[in-house]
Length: 92
Image (tube, rainbow, N blue to C red):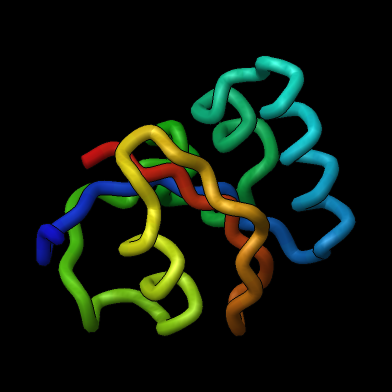
């Protein structure tokens, strides 16, 4: 397992919003488009949700634990942190 990974995320405040986004993703909508449109993390939203590369210890624990378990190209179920609900997609 790599100690440096690349992910994007969509951050929303409510679980119900995250579940609606998951449905839209399952119906074929593009992750980056939804991140730009709906994510409350304005800095990453401008970059299709991209957080770039990071290592363990750089992100909040619930996010990190999930991100490092994902396979490249895989999208997580909503993950709750103190910032809200994240949907994470791993790129590398």
